[in-house]
Amino acid sequence: MKKNSFLILIIFALLIISSFSCKKDSSNSSTITTLLGKWKYVSHTEKENGVIVGTPYIGKPEDYFDFKVNNVLEVFFNGQKFSTTYSISGNKVTIVNSGSNMIFEITFNSNKCTLYNQDLVQHYEGIFLLQK
Image 1 (tube, rainbow, N blue to C red):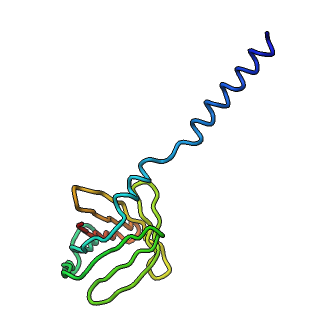
Image 2: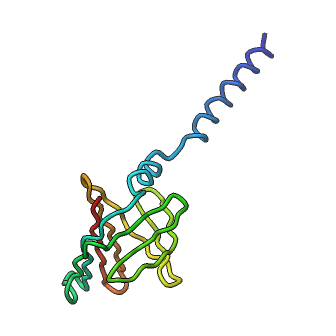
């Protein structure tokens, strides 16, 4: 009887452990699903110490960000097209830009997406607005 109880206890423990370890990150897959596809590049604003620097870029009708399934980001902006890679973790997207990684916080509001980047050392903020 003790052997059967012990065996049942081990099986039960394994089932509990496997149910926690196999859980998928639903926020990550939700972010990926929402972000995938072509977005109109609406604008880009840069700030230093909370003050807007220069003139914000207002997207042209042909400007876009296209987040592809294979982690390739295609961008057409200011008459130029380029491709790079990206990865997603939770509500953050890492975009490779000229060999360095830029990490953006992603927020969605209806059919709009904001990519927010902040560098606390250089007191810099970059805000990209995109729209489906």
